[in-house]
Length: 141
Image (tube, rainbow, N blue to C red; front, side):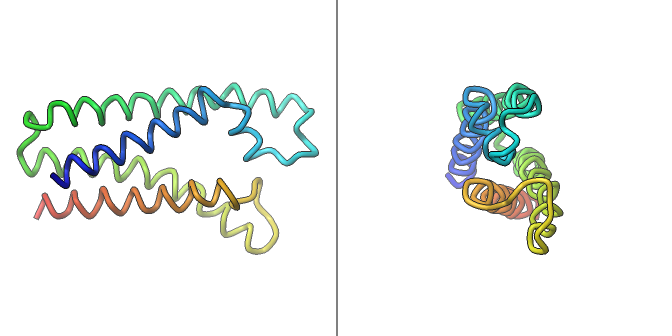
């Protein structure tokens, strides 16, 4: 039951990423690009390049759904552990690549601000990493 719940959480989170990056790329770009730079070509480039990230999120959401629908095929603890570990690394990479930016924010620097929605994303990637990693380790041991 807990495996399925974590897969649902992963699905929802990855679909939210797909929505923001691919379907609503300008919202993503507004989170990153300060208002005074939004009339530059960089804003449009970032908004369009977000679709690339959305594609990854969509494929991970699809994988989560397929695992959810076929969870009996992955009933072994080691199988589940490996899959959850991969999801933990996925979420963790988003957190750890943003960590230096968040730390620079504390001293007034950083290429973008980790606040508001970005802070929510930052924290949720950490939470999702820990949920997946904890369950992966539980299944492994």
